[in-house]
Image (cartoon, rainbow, N blue to C red; front, side):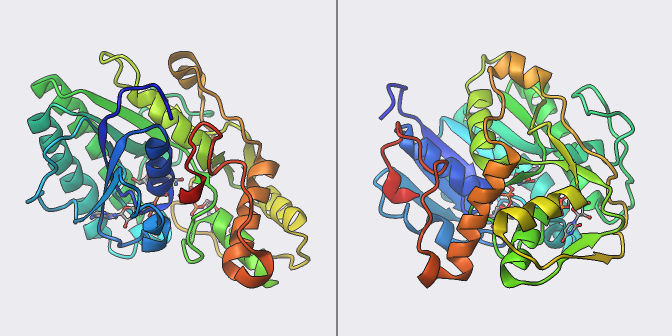
Length: 342
Ligand code: NAD
Ligand code: UDP
């Protein structure tokens, strides 16, 4: 158990991929966690084991609506509620924009009433298809405002603007992190993002679906590093609001990623080339100088190590009897003392 002061922390989107890892880490640090989620893309399985933890409570709620029963006490809010996979956020684009924008307004109002500090999970998508490489926080981006990704990209840009205005206009303590592609255990089998798609296909013996030429790049960060950075950002001094890029700067093409997944999963299923997606960014790589300097943070999990961890987890989901539950070095730190909740 940590020596830090115990706080009450609201995590919106707490039943999702990133949110559930964050809930586990915060409970491990001795905080009380209120998980708010509507289970639209998250899963009850992700938090099932947390329900018996005395410090954990669940609020089933849609962030587009104001909170009727708001927690009596809230010190910190991590605002993650939002579909993150292109497959999910493009399914109902109007709802995606509503979730991001109304969710930001509702959570900022809560933060204002309760004098809570609030962190926004923004995204590298605010840079769109970037003309600056690698991307630094002062780059204003290159987004197609009427494209199929705009509901998410422009929604997240609008949320950043609302956050900064609540800070300037009402003095709300805000933090903004721009998260680059993050992967790891607890992604859903049907999530649709590239790492989970490739691993599930490799384990099922299906060819890996490479969209377009496969020469487009991304930089992938393991979820344990991401959670570490988010908590560090929340704990920076009040005057520092960001935005700060969080990601692993190792940049790979989708062909390279597919080759690594095939090697690390021992699969011989190969690749199949499918039509390119509209508005798919060609390159993406974070400049993390600011995070290194202000958060004293840098990613620790290499891509091969992280993929192997994620392969082991998907194997346990797809072949639960033969594979068992894998031992992951990342899902609980020795200091957390809550291995039962991983
Ligand atoms: P996820 O889809 O696994 O999690 C999102 C969670 O939000 C789910 O539990 C979902 O049920 C919940 N949610 C969605 N709409 C809601 C609503 N209206 N009310 C209440 N809950 C709602 O996605 P994730 O990868 O865990 O992403 C979490 C956050 O991080 C998102 O805000 C996303 O934009 C941001 N982000 C993630 C990545 C990444 O690579 N994972 C990259 C950039 C930004
Ligand atoms: N991608 C792919 N095959 C898939 C899923 C995605 O080649 O099955 C590509 C996609 O075209 C994009 C990259 O992988 O260039 C990352 O896609 P993802 O949906 O994971 O995230 P985002 O586009 O939001 O960065």
